[in-house]
Image (cartoon, rainbow, N blue to C red; front, side, top):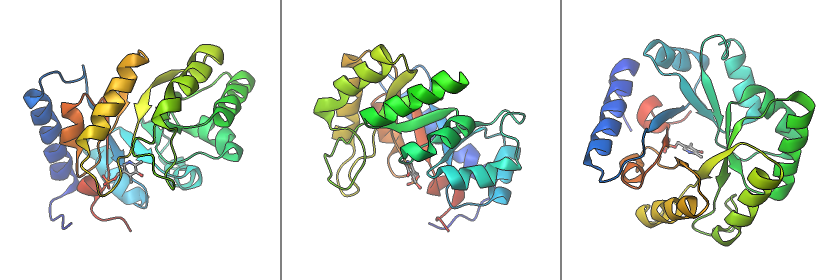
Length: 224
Ligand SMILES: *Cc1c(COP(=O)(O)O)cnc(C)c1O
């Protein structure tokens, strides 16, 4: 993707497309937040987007996020940090300390680790349960048929702040049926949050009620 515009114009263009998609939707979510996915992009590029007014950022890796955002004082600058990649239990401590949201809760062991860290520190990010809607062997996420069980464990038993569901549709499939499935699962489980939609398909995700779209390359250009 070639991006000739400056960061402000790129951000404004994505925000305008989000608004337009919401207006076209029959029943949009009460809000749709833009998460700027900054993985692989450096501090200077992130700062340029902060200057342009962006506050929500998504990263895939705990260590990379920690290194890049340390100098940006995320709390003091009013930034909201989202972990959108898989989380290993040995990284839970660092993840809980840094992130405001984790989109990749996908197994009981991780729910228990987050609950222990919450009990020890009094802190816990808001959580999305990641659902493997395409049932792909290599992809993380709980199978759709087991999502309810994981939500009940995390939210109802462990009292974790589970606010929604997240999915990444298979790369070479039409995304709409995956967004529809995630939205219907969320309704069944009485969850309001829907983290779905990336650069190529965020407008479709909004039509199915996305509350959080995760946009990387359309904002920052191709990944380094
Ligand atoms: C990288 C990534 C994105 C952003 O993808 P783009 O296609 O660059 O917008 C969104 N969600 C997840 C989980 C990602 O890993």
